[in-house]
Length: 75
Image (cartoon, rainbow, N blue to C red; front, side, top):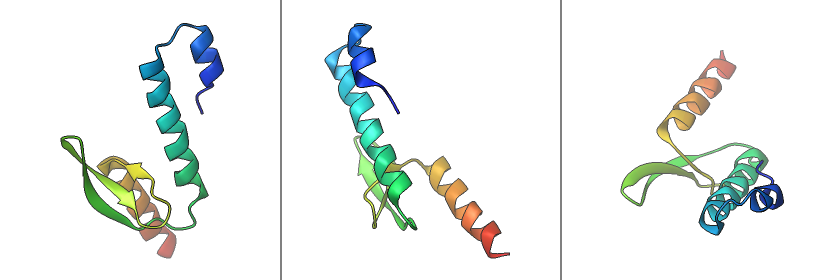
């Protein structure tokens, strides 16, 4: 997790602080979810994946790794 106060003290811009805050919030959602159920969404000009359960937004590499982990856990 990003320490936003330390970032401010180091002179990080408020725009960058907002990005860091958004990442922190997404991480909290992602870590609190019992089981992700992803569907594809368009974020800006990119396609990402949102979880139906927690609302976290992830890229394809996270989702593929997550799905592979579930697959391996079943065996």
